[in-house]
Amino acid sequence: MKSICVLTEKTGEAALTNLAKKLLAVLGGRVALMSDGQAQSNAFAEQLKTAFVRGGGTVLCLPDGFEARVISAARLLEADAAVYLSYDSACRMSVYGENGRRLTNEEEQRIAQSAPQGLLQPGRSVSLSPAQTYAALARRVGGSLENVAASFASPDPSVLRFMRQTAFSLGMIERKTPRFFISRSGLTVAAQDERGVLHPHGSLLDLCCACELADHKPLTVPFSASFTLTELAGQNGVALQRSAQGGHEPWQTDGVLLALRLLRHMSQRGQALSTLFGSFSFPCERRMTLAFNGSLERLADHIPCEEIVTQTDQLLFLKRRQAGAVLTRRKSGSRCCLEVQAPDAETARELCGELEQAVLTFSEI
Image (tube, rainbow, N blue to C red; front, top):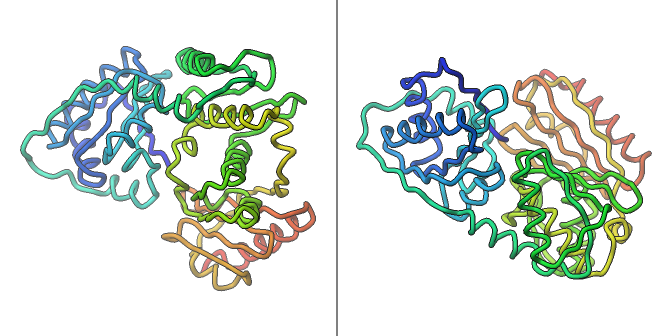
């Protein structure tokens, strides 16, 4: 997950230096730093750069841009951490781990609890220009977009401008639908297809993964990814693995790149977005939030299933025939998010009810 801190005028030099030292101690010494370009964000970025250097770190200073860019830059630069500053009534700091991955709850706790180290040998700052690198990455992900039409929307003008320039340069033409809605950060995307159906980010990611598997490309996907992908991988004779972080493909964690990758699949197949969705059968889903104070690892011992995986008592993944579920502990530690997938609504409802009862019964174990 992404760690967010709010910086105010009361956040003094000493507090920023201590925070920088904590991040360096837990995450590592190479930090990619970027802001959204607003005056307030830039001011804190300068202070943080100084704080990281005082803490002995190497600061990779990136030009202003939207948040998704710092994630890709962190991967390309093999950074130990990435920090993004944005201003919206207050200055918000987003922190990512190695190669731009989201922080785990354990890492967030270690950052909060770690004691800043004493005086260290000063580090250094390096000014970089990854704008063209990100543009090149987007072009590689999109490839040729000949014979495909779409439109874009975003609350951030720079995100919208980048999407339009990149897609049009790759051969796309503009049409009202499908319409891709990219978030202000550029990290997530939703879409409305030609029939007016709205598809959230998770559904678009599942669709893109399905297209990749149909093209015989092995993948690692998040535990929460559609169970249809397992069957599809078997049909195409390719390997499919699941992990908490998902795979290394940049479009798996970047809404801008995910939209471009889907447009590429539409172009290659000569299919509309609605037709592409119709090519695959995705399972029914149910989601709910449950109170839970116990151990997910112990809970796993009381649930009959074919396959079960737990990770650091923060995530439980189970599979039963064509159905499966993911339980993810919330930050508070006292609640869990339950996501169930099944081939039909009745099976999804039954499994959801069974797991809800197990959570209620063993909430204190």
